[in-house]
Image 1 (cartoon, rainbow, N blue to C red):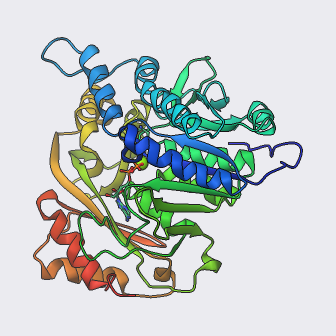
Image 2 (image 1 turned 180 degrees about the vertical axis):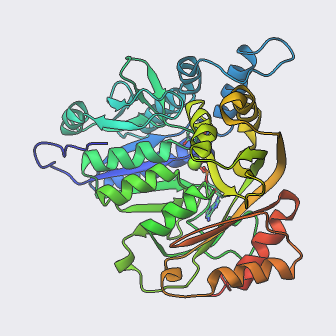
Image 3 (image 1 turned 135 degrees about the vertical axis):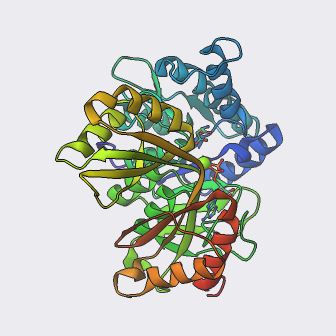
Length: 423
Ligand code: ADP
Ligand code: ASP
Ligand code: MG
């Protein structure tokens, strides 16, 4: 994304406030969110409110798309992503209008904007589009006239002039992008938990709220499954140095600030545990061990939009090897179909798909300077009898693939092993 700062220095400081699905679930919640916006407007901010669809609405719309694209009783593997976008973006259109009305009702001058009206321009990747740019000229003008803005999150307009959505959870990314483009003082993400925790507080009761977390760690946690922020939103915040805060829309507790590493005093070796429940492991048996075979396998998968995560190639015997990779459970049928179609070019003996796996990861910048962290993780899992199927590491994380039935056990064991409940 390119963010051209607004031309003239704005007369008033600006604030972006984003409300997620549960925070705008019904009119009562929308009123509650509107009252928070009024508080900030009364403090002297020009506010850009970014809204998600009402809780559950996007899932319903996705189900309708799948149903309409399938023959009765079947489940379509492919559908037109432009029409998907036309349907699923409608959830945010509704809440933007409702929020503007709720604001007007309490005396806060506001109007709603669709993504294409702002406009937020995206690339052509319908369904998971990336933001190219935001033109804030019209918003700047309206702020100048004393109007606050309510903007439908999750959506923009593609190069084909059609509505494009930013992938599930994309309203977070809309919020950060508008904060960068508008030169906002802060981007506040209001959600149904009061901050970023050491792990999902819905799974581990003694998970601890973090006062601050570095962009880098948050980026890893988000990309490894902590859906409290969409990964791309953290990337943008890091690039444009947006001060990002996660806080509850239901109480007035302090939230979590996502900021530079240098602003954090407390530092643990491991900061958090993230997990992805619906993973699958696919193994191609009896693949020729020759140059180009990995490209022959992963090229067609990439072209078909299958996101491959971990990859392991086994030791070769008699010139044949096994290649294992992980992907989202939803993508397994497509992956297998693609590999069947590419069999001639690859040459494999059999495909084995294990749909019942999950990924658990530990994240912490302290790992850079401490040895033995992975070993502690493996020992904690072994003590609970959890078998590890695949391992990957990077500078600040270790991830393992395990049987899904052990997911809760593994997350709790790791949370305890690294004493994440304690300050
Ligand atoms: P919203 O609808 O407001 O965007 P989401 O459901 O997308 O909210 O994200 C908030 C949820 O993220 C929480 O309800 C919580 O279950 C989950 N979550 C996962 N990991 C974490 C974490 N480490 N800290 C806080 N919340 C987390
Ligand atoms: N409503 C969209 C979703 O459920 C976008 C968002 O809430 O961030 O994925
Ligand atoms: Mg979300």
